[in-house]
Amino acid sequence: MRALWMLPLALAVAAPGCAEPERGDRGAWRGSAAELSASKPEALPADAGLAELLDYAARRNPGVQAARARWQAAIERAPQMRSLPDPQLMYEYWGMERSKQQMLTLGQTIPWPGKLMLAGSQAEKEAQAEFQRYQIARLALAYRVKNAWFELWYLARALEIARENVELARSVEETVRTRYQAAVAAFADMLKAQVELARREDLVKDLEAMKSPTAARLNAALDRPAEAPLPPARNAPADERLAASDAEVLAALAEASPELLAMNAEVAAARDARALARRGPIPDLMLKAGPMVMEQQGMDSQSGVQVGVGLTIPLWFGKYRALRREADAKLAAAEFSRREAGNRLASDAKMALFALRDADRKASLYRDVILPRAEQAMAAALAAYQAGKTPFVEVIDAQRMLIEFRLELARTQANREKALAELEMLAGRELPKETKP
Picture 1 (spheres, rainbow, N blue to C red):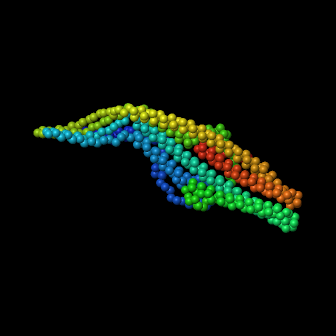
Picture 2: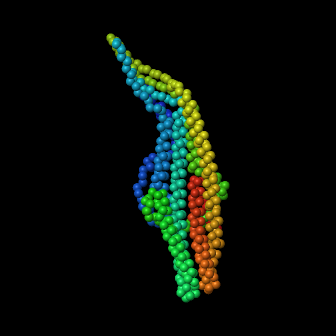
């Protein structure tokens, strides 16, 4: 009798273990939920460079941590979906005038073979997609940090150039004022020099004002207060070029882009969901067993065991037809989204490649051709004016061109780094680079 009591219990306990086997091939995307503990606040080194900022942001950014938590939560769905439904324990009593009967049963529903496997497979693929979403969040964060960092570098370089030009404009204004006092220069020339000096000083103020919102953008990515001090972005971008053709970059994107990998996993999960929906109308097995006791007036009580086997009845066919249509539509949506993402990412990569190549070309042009000539033109115009051979307006024009070209070179260098950062975000990996000759 005791063995019969243990039979249904053993059935209920052993069956879920069969539905959730131990697996060591879950892949590198499987992590530990214990790693989700929040890190303590830490100080940012005063001399931190871009690499240190990227590492700091990856550890502390709440958006990245939220994506990681969603991935960890998704991991825990697979064992749930592969497990059997909870067993049912039921006590029944029948009482009549001369007899009564008591029964204790333990029942277990066992889904049709393959249903639990498909549900678990779907959950695992959804977890893989969440892992890729986590990678997307990390890459997007790195791009935001780089974007703000190189903008701060540009502002620092632009301020340096603007202040040098203020000193140059001040020197020119003093020269014109001296010539005016000696009755050699016109009063209009002195006014023009003073106006140009005021414009240069105003440019310095504008650039200084732009530093605060840009720093706030970087601090937001670092999970720091908007006004928190940041290390200066002093180092110029590396003089490197992309050592890969456009075709190689697009191939790397198609192979390793986390967004495409996430959508591939979502398509695979949708296929599992569709296969599971096809099995929806298949009946599930129901088992139950337990002891029973029957007593009749004037007779000794009798005990025994009852065993039952049953099937679920998939009676509501409209529900299952709707379930299949829903699964078909979700799979189609996932496949269309995957194709749309591929087209969009390729287009974005082509635009970023154009921006990168264009910045490389312009940087070489400004650095090697335009700036040296603009500096010569400025020196010649100033010497000619001091010798009384040219009007002052030519000095002003030469000075304006020089500062514009110097600022444009700095802007081009910063834009080049931003375009490269965008490419690496889209491709999901660091792209090969080589030092320019």
